[in-house]
Amino acid sequence: VAQCPLHHPDVAQLKQVPNIAPEAFRQAERALVLRPRAENNSRCKLHERRIQFASAEAAEKVGIDIDVVRQRPIVEAVVANGEIRYDETRMARLASRVAGTAWRVYTQVGDRVREGDVLALVDAAEVGKAKASFLQAITHVRHETTNVDQLKPLVPGGTVSGRQFREAEAALEDAQIVLHGAVQALANLGFSVDAGEFSKASIDDISRHLRFLGLSDELLDRINTATSNLFPVKAPIDGVVVNRTLVAGEVVQTNSPLFSVADVEQMWLVLDVREEDVKFLSRGQRVLFRRASGGDGPEVEGSLSWISTAVDDQTRTVEVRAELPNAGGRLRANSFGTGRIVLREEGRAVVVPTEAIHWDGCCHVVFVRDKNYLNADAPKFFHIRKVRPGVKDSGGTEIIVGLLPGEVIAAKNSVVLEAQLLKGNLGAGCGCGAD
Image (cartoon, rainbow, N blue to C red; front, side, top):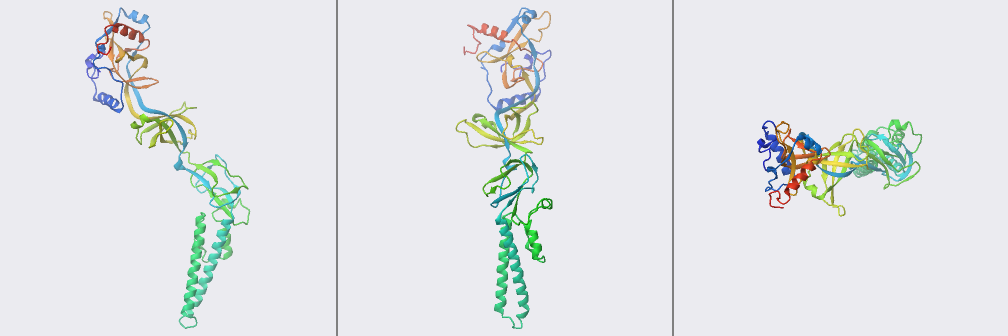
C-alpha cells in the first residue's frame, strides 16, 4: 500500500509520529502469507487526493459519522456446517455371543453404565452345554489322574506292565486336552475359568459355581432360577445406553445388535469443508463449534483430528473431523451447527467498521480525517487511504496494512465521501491507467 503508515508512520493522521513495533510487521506478514488477499493497483494515485468540506458543520449536515481505529482480537478461520456424532472410538454396539432368548433386560436408553455392568441376560442352551462339557472334562481328568497315580507304584515290581502305564498316561493327556478345549470354549463365550482352582472342590461345588458364572453377587440376589444357561451381555466401556432393541422373551441371534453404549464425554464434529479451503487445514488445528439451535452460549473448543482424502461427488466438499470435549453434556448426537477451523489468531488486530471500507474499481480505500481537523482555523478534509482488508466478521473488518490505531475515519454514511471521490474521478480517472 503506497504511503502506508506502517512503513511511513509520518503520514499517519495522529498528533505524534508513532513508533511502529516489530510485532506489527510480523502480524501483517502472517496475514499476507496465509492466504490470498485483495490487492490494490500499485499505480493508483488516490492516496494523493483529499476530500474537503467547507466546514465541520457541512460534514455533519450530510450525516457523516466518524469512528476511531481500534485494536481487538480477531480469529481467521475456515467456516463450515457440521454435525455432532458419537465418537466411534468410544462407542460399542453389543450383540450376544450366543443365540437364545432374552431372559431379563436391566437397562433402558439413557441409563449410565460402567464397564462390566450386566445389561441383559440371555437364556442360551449353548452356554449350558459348554458348562456341562467343562464339568465332564474335569471329572474325566480326575479319573485318569487317579488311575495313573494308582498304577505308577506297581510298575517297578512288574505287577503292571510299562505299556499299560504308558496307555494310562496317554489317556490322562487326552483328558487334559479335552479339559483345555472346554476351558477355551467357555473363554470364547466370555467366561474366565481356571481348572486348577477346582482341583480339590467337589463336583457339586463346581456345578454351583458354573451355574452363575460371570454374574456378580449383587445380580445373584435378584435371580431365582436353577438354569445354567444364562449368558450376561455386559457393557465393555463406561458410558450411556443410547440404543436398545431388546425386550424380555425375544429370540436373540448373534448378528442382532441389542444395545449401543457411547462414552459421551467426547464427541465428534464432522464438517463439510469446501474443496478449495482444504489446503489451509492440518491436523491439530483449533476448532470452535456453535450449535444451530440453543447456541447462545460459548463456543465448544476442540481440535482437528482427521481430514478425508476424498471429495464428495455431489457437494464437492471434503469431510473433516474434530474431537470435542463434552463434559457438561451440552453436545448431542445428530445436532447441527457451524464450525470454525482456526487458521490465525491475532490479539491486537486493527479493525474498522466494514461500512468504512470502499472499492473504487482498483483500490480499497478508507477516508481518514486530518489530524488538525478540530483546529478552528484548519481546513476540514479527509485523506484517501488505500488499505488491505483482512478478516471480516460481525464486528467489522481487519485492516492488515493501511491504518494505525487512534486514527479517525469516516464510518457511517461514508458513502457520501465515496460519491465525491467517484465524481472527481469522472473523466480524470484514478491515475492508475486502468480507467
